[in-house]
Image 1 (spheres, rainbow, N blue to C red):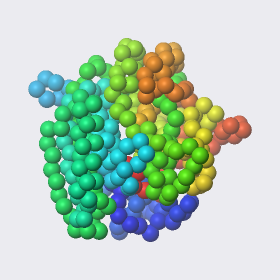
Image 2: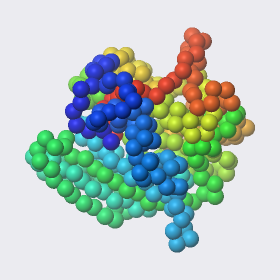
Image 3: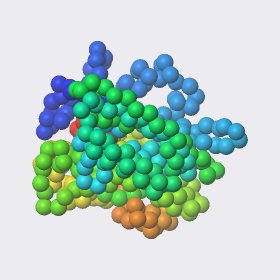
Length: 356
């Protein structure tokens, strides 16, 4: 939901003002996945749109239709630049939609795509994106069943935006949910965090590091299937997008009314991501991913789930990073490398505008 220009300030120039009780206009921070996003959803959208399904605030809704249990999701992609190391806005739109369905144990079936195009966009660039979206959908065995285009005046968009909707059939008996974390659960992340967000920022700012950072953008259906194939109970499953690992864990802690304790030493962060974050003054915990998930599982099952994840190409660097506790419900606490503890709060502004 981010877009346009704002009067944002802050670390490395990518933040925005601290949240106030109310705003008369949208700010970039409303799209960060942090405090302002949460405020916008709960104070404006839910009072007018909420029903029993939407109020659960899951990334994909679970509904019944014609005796089938379906997962339905919608999302918009406004990344800038539209081409980046490891992907582009077309493949990103497919992966992001599929991943929301996969987190509910759904096999992706159908995809719609709506293209909002800025006047002056190169036809070559448009064809490249459409071709990428189509080939990514084919590789992921999801059919594009509806498509739409709109053109806006030059300056009214940033080259192109893509909106998608996805439908899948839920294939497991008891899908994970954001309110199912339990005391004693172990928290597993599927790989190194922050790659997507830092790939975008390095491309945007022209940062040249010794090793190029590529986006982790990837479909997670097969990884999720490997987890479910263990037959073990999976309490929560969430892909890490805007707001990164920190924001996803805060959302799950709040929904489940439990505390989360993280071990900083165990969280996998590539050295090149650490270096880029240090240059830009950013915290990798809040940097977006597009091919990573976090799982909450009972402690006795954690090693088996970890092994299943590590046996999949997208989970090869999976690691246990923390646990669920009854203490400090709704909050995330990080144990640092030097033994200190700090509260991990929601973003007040927007570290990385326009990255997904």
